[in-house]
Length: 333
Image (cartoon, rainbow, N blue to C red; front, side, top):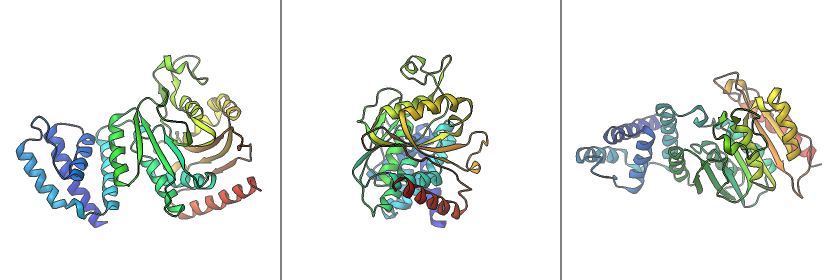
């Protein structure tokens, strides 16, 4: 841990030096720092950074000794610096990286429900890639290092995609990235599975919202409801979606309209309420929603409904695993 802290401070110093020299955001300087270190040369464009900064950075890079750092440590340092980028550059709350504990819950559900075969997995709100990469790393570990996954990430923020690109490289993960509004037609083929921590809020493009059944009758529509509809439209028959969603869409006034619509379109498989202590704002709790698209191999089954205790306690995941196994055995009896 001490070594990691030292590395973090060394990298931070390099990023801030470059940020000042180029007068760019922390995110841009972070991406360029790792590009420089990976390529072994400092990128200079139109005389920036200047010669003095190039000499200074060369010394700092030498002190880091990048080639001697393990891939795991590089990925860890980059994750911590990404969190700083999200805070420093004032990213939207929807762009905050998903906590690793949530990725573990989703990975457990995916491991149970998905077949052990080649499949395309799409995250239409990939952000920094944290959720997707954490899930894939865990699935590979559970599948004896087998890599069955073709990954696609979609995001409408170019800076986010640059961070995802570096993180993918550091984690030895191949991914195709698309810079687009995920509520416009997708540029990738339909997916076997879709994973996402859905951005919550209003969708500003009213004209496009008219293409969706879940458009608001007046005013802006909810982006998260439109995205779920878009996800269903882009899932292969029998395909699964594993989504982190606001709990408010599953019950109450919004749920009263949305859930009957959803249950006509797909087979609900699981609703796992996440613990309240995971969210800064207690009024915006989230759940993991799992459903399967209709198809020749899909059928209605008992839905796994559970609320998780604090994920700070180790036994919570053990208890969840027991429930998951019991439920899975029952629906496949």
